[in-house]
Amino acid sequence: MKSTGRVGRPKASSRETLAEAACELFLEQGFEATSIADITSRAGVSRSSFFNYFASKSDVLWAGLDERLTSLEERLAEDDGADASAGVRAAVLALGSEFAPDSLALAIVNATAMGLDSELDREGALRRTRIGRAVADRLSRGGADRLHAEVAGAAWGGAVLAAVEAWAHDGAGVTSLERFLSRAAEAAGSVTHTPQPGEVRQLRVVVRAADFDGALAFYRDVVGMPQSEAYEAEGGARVAILDAGRATLELSNPAQVDFIDRVETDGVTSDPIRIAFEVDDAAGATDRLAAAGAEVEASARPTPWRSLNSRLRGPADLQLTLFQELGPE
Image 1: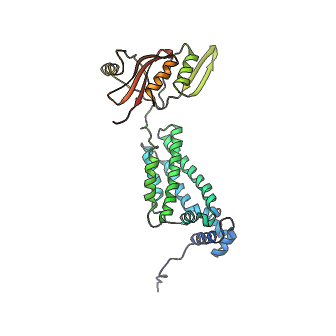
Image 2: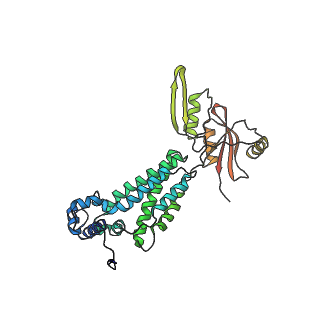
Image 3: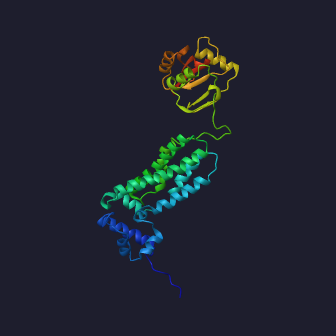
């Protein structure tokens, strides 16, 4: 006759039994005072059985999340979609799918009673770094510069751990981890925008400067463009590469150039190539550059496209526009 099995709660696995025993002991005597031998004795299993499931006491708490993080890393490493930001968001939200309350949630809520505050801080930092590295690598492959990718990665690492903590304190099991991850993703996503991938990796403007030192001092120290690279060669050849932030190429037909000149100046004609710098304070930056020797061709003035623009002539005979985005009215 076929048995129907025991009615009621299913028999717990050795892994679940060990986790339950560990958490009981952490509550009774604290994390540091609890040994692996204590846990296996309480669970009624051998020491070797413990290491079949966990690498350490701490692993009892983090194993469930770590399995999800491994899946997240694999998914991001394999993702080659056009929108890296969307891929990151989807991978993070998938991390919370059907994630059941476990030892980590219990530990977060009872951290002080279990003596786990420092342990959770230390181990949480490792997971944030792990997530951040996976996200940064994916965003870099999607076209983000390394600095932006690292910042966004750190934001996503913090978002995931913050969501787990909020979920635990809200009563893990009452609501889903996905709900908290979705809310955290809104915050992290604000720093995750990546450009659409193209064939050009960087726009670099190459300028011939007869007074090299003067031009370098002006654009690096006065304008405020950090020097990222510098090289010297035979015959006194020198070059410095300055970081100008985000680079774009603006193409305008003659009618548009004439219109810009009328708006931006009092009759000054644009050179075939004009360099434009976005700044936070166009009027203040204009005064600063003028004090350093730039010739002001047009003072800062508002434009129909909600910016404040000025026109100058800088070292190496570069025609410059400074523009400050004013935002919506």
